[in-house]
Image (tube, rainbow, N blue to C red):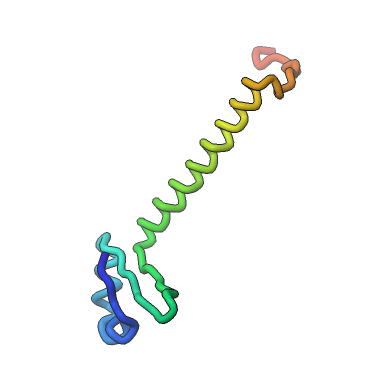
Length: 83
């Protein structure tokens, strides 16, 4: 990860954006630790997908735990796919 000050970012924006696009995140340090990170869209999408997957797996695990604790309900299947 590359670290940059806002003044450096303004002076060399294209270079920093090219770095981010090529897979090297850029952290822009700001006062009061209000830092930001510049990522490529591809990396952002990968992080978002990983977060959604983790949330989905946690939800599945909660459901499995509830079933194992006897908190599930049984339902009949209506109709048959072969009919």
